Image (cartoon, rainbow, N blue to C red; front, side, top):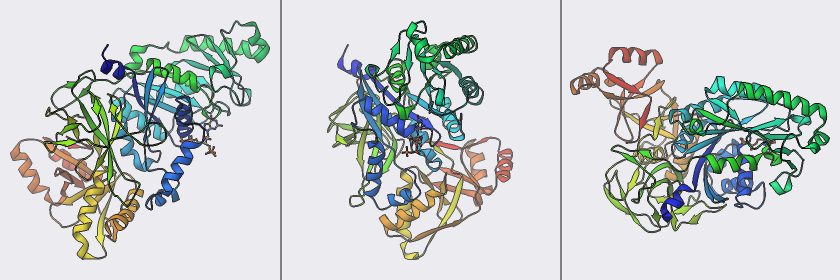
Length: 528
Ligand code: G4P
């Protein structure tokens, strides 16, 4: 097998999706510990805090107790290279999260065993389902009293509409937690507080029939467990790899991240069964990761933490071929070759300069405004990866300047900040207003703060009667012309020059859609 194929097939690129507080940070930390990427639990959190302190505007998010940044963590495990793409936890930044999910090959859903399926998990799962992303499920906090495991599986199946295949089954819960059974291997792992980090550090019985097991968990518990397993076997589905890879079934694990319990069982199963990089659709053909020619797309742009330099990092997912430091790649949107010098990798806890990267890997490119979210880089072929969405914002404000002479800077700032994708910038066709759309209200504070800090523009955001936005396409040229004339009062151009209908109310949108059946009113704009 060529080096390229070998390296590609051992990549596992995924993200964790969960509702805040389910335990994503804790689990991430434990996974990194297994990968030897960090030495001490707690360092992911403290690193987060240290990073926040380095930038002024980040103080804002710290005040609010949330994290705006997301990062990429690469670590080796067994013979695999795992790329874990972190997703920001706060609901206000969900757009960012959605786009991270376009750059992964699979996802891990973390659920709190006491809370079950929560609202944000439902939203994120919808996105995964759109792309048939394979999903594994980790039901966390088994050391606390939670809902019955059967109940939880039922909820996942009915609320999320995905078949559950339990791989790990808990023996008791909360104060009665004794351990777990691996339903595929039959092994029983005992829960021992302060231990359980690795297999060597755990008490493992080969099967339920081990005579010592009864002595450890008690005859009554063992009987209960056998009854329960019989029930589970009858009522649930066996693991079916094809169904998992098609996004129709989720293997389910139980554990306690904070106690290391069940984490290695999950990771072992993950590296064995989670998909390696998959082919990806483009505007002209599908690109297989095995192809030798380099290609990739940008799914995220992040402002540099260092305000002195004010450059941005564009996160590119490699889709085929090999990235070599200093190579030139074709930037499809501008039609120009760009030298990809000093790309960053995200090994361990620090950014490092990357020498080579393979499909599934993410590299950070320094960006001075020429790279946008959704951009494709190739070895020369003119095609673009599809499916990187721009969601319709749900909140709108009009930007008003305190100093009218700063209009140019304001326009520049709004346009540059919307490059990052967290806000969207609209210019109505019939007025000189500058309208900003966002998915959450916090975005307006962040933008106002950054306009002042980075562009020396003092702007405030005031209410405007827009309730939703739709990208308008389709129809004949004549119909479109007619629409532009009739609906001009509500039309705007977005930062990419596309036509957008800004509806004052939902009812208005519905009536407009009924009136113009030949046109499509899309809630997302795909980056072309
Ligand atoms: P998030 O990233 O999904 O928001 O969750 P995070 O890992 O920060 O975990 C949220 C809280 O749940 C943390 O407690 C964490 O320690 C706790 N937690 C995580 N896994 C488990 C588990 O298996 N069992 C129990 N009992 N708790 C767990 P916190 O008090 O908010 O933070 P901290 O003081 O521990 O840092």
